[in-house]
Image 1 (spheres, rainbow, N blue to C red):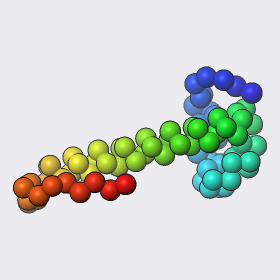
Image 2: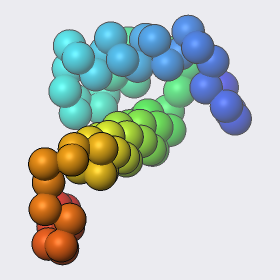
Image 3: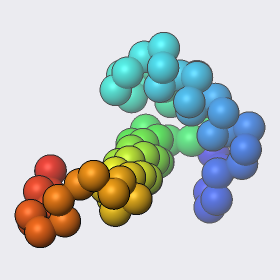
Length: 79
C-alpha cells in the first residue's frame, strides 16, 4: 500500500476505474491495487471538488468576458 502523493500512473488507473465503476469503491480500490479504500474515497472527493472548482472558475470567466451580460444582477451560486 502506497502513502503520500499519488503517482501519475495511480491517478490514471483511478480515472479509468472511476469511469468503469462509478462510486463502487471496492472495485476501484482493487483496480488501482496500491491504495486503500479510504485513500481512494479521499482522492475521489478531492478530484471531484477540483473539477467543480474549475467549472465554477470557467463559468465566472465567461460571465465577465461576455459583454452582453447584465452585470448589475447578482451572480447566482449553485451548490
